[in-house]
Length: 299
Image (cartoon, rainbow, N blue to C red):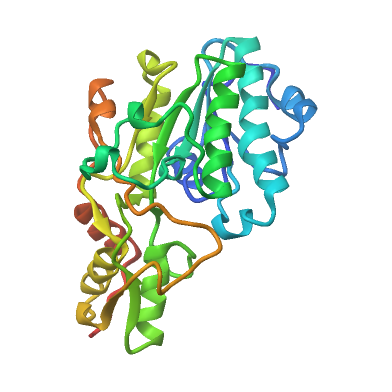
């Protein structure tokens, strides 16, 4: 490893978003679990002690298995809470900056004041305790990073997908199920903002290159909102299948180990106030994602 301080460090570089950042910035220092264990402070110190004030660390590493986290709490806390704190401790010591990726699950899922408007960063109650282990550990990770380095930039996002064939994200799963089932039932009472991973990767690079965002909390999703049911129908339509084959159901009829937010639409206003270019609307992004993988089916 070179002794020179890198301009950009990507942690979690083989994950869904990290891979796309790496594709745009192959000159960056690309780290995954084989190169650094963020849950181990000595490992983080050893790998990142050569950072300097010109370096930006983008932390894409996370324990994102939402249901598994309900029983594997220690693993979720290690990666989502201890990991960001270790990274932030190093950026504070070296003068580098940390851009930490967080999630809509830090909110409790109830619309602010019951008015179903998009959520602003300041809508998060300081005493909030998200209902899922995943959400709680991600919120604790925001707080642990800020405690170690108040200059940490937190970027919350939601419903991230690539849509690539063979993937496990929601869009990829809908593509697979379209070929396996006559109909698919999807919940229509959870509403959020789908986010194309390629757009999020470019958004995170923009934040890393914008010093004025230091110490802020930003929301970054594709613009607009829909339910999972509406997103599934849009996927079917986008690959040339009949969207009427997607049937609505409710969260109560489709129980999961971890509770999901009923309302987690993130407002783009904080992003715009920071002088950053808003991400495109979610339907345009979905069209681009499906076109990028080049698969359509007859319905």
